[in-house]
Image (cartoon, rainbow, N blue to C red; front, side):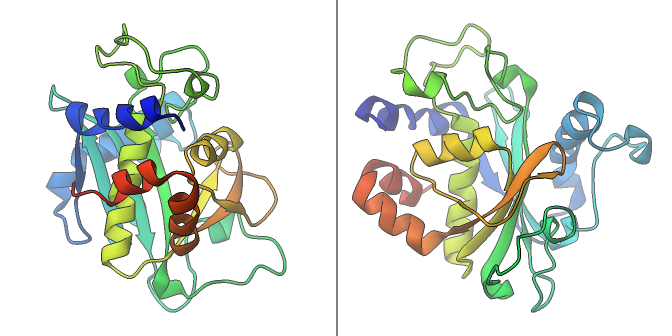
Length: 244
């Protein structure tokens, strides 16, 4: 990651208000997050049947055990969201275990020190460039130097997936403050590669599955991640660890 890319990450805080809603957040506070999930997972992609959510909010049985995160733009719109699904017991009963399970021989880390990154959603107006994926990441763009303002959003084009990295920083800070060391995630290959480009290296732990599209299960160890970033990308590590 170049120094220009590192500087561009400051755009996250200029253009978006990022928030951790907490495990006990009232549903009224989360409705716009659930509506964004519905728009993407039900209406746009058809991963989930819209008829199952007549109120236009996609909510599942894991949400009561999850910490929700949001990104709000200058127009007060929720334009990005993600969640950390927490362990409900000493068993690793995370969503991907039923739909995108790790391969044989995988050593399961302590459940209470683990969480699953899931329900990542980015408003479609932040992923209109050619090559943008569902999560607003673009493998071709990130290898270019940051440029002028984006014609669609009006924000300075950074080429970095600002919304995604901002949400990951929020999840990182929550995890470090609450004893969570390991992150599970079911990711498409392009998202895993873009995160790796920025030094966020998840390790594949199983074969590819069809789970909201072709994805593989991954595991991230935050201790290992920090050590790698300290050596290879200290600017990104400092940004992740900076006060929100």
